[in-house]
Length: 204
Image (cartoon, rainbow, N blue to C red; front, side, top):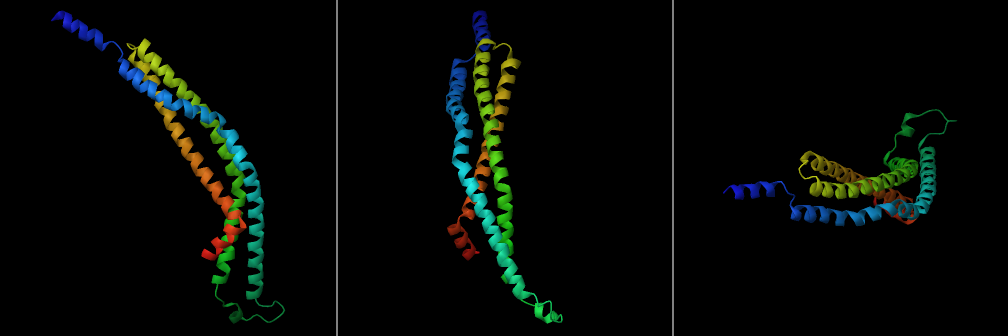
């Protein structure tokens, strides 16, 4: 009976290979390709978006000027002649004709002013994500090693696991930020496209 209890006690003080190699190995195998991809993400993103962003900036500038000129022409048609006596009845018109150029012009200006800033931010996210991915993959290896070689120091390998989990949470936030920024940039690129612009204006 004593030998059995001693065996149970010794077994409880030993790491579980199935848990260590199974979970730790699986996480490492999944994280390694993601880490490799993160190393090249900034370069690929820069190559993919640099030229479209510059073209979209020019297109949105042209679009904003076009809409503001349209608004100016409509205002000139609405406002009474300054050389004539003022008549309040002359300016009582339907404002709906002014809403579209105002709305589209403001949107084009906002997107134009934001697209380069968003491009810089998405590149920063790529750089941070690379660092976090490398740290996470390294911590997975460290945590697995500590689990096997410093199993009795529970606080040590558990702390490493918690730090790894924190790195994973940060990586998820960064990936989400990348997706949001990329979607906004793509939307601005579409709005700068003359074909997309005219179809969208007609729908609006």
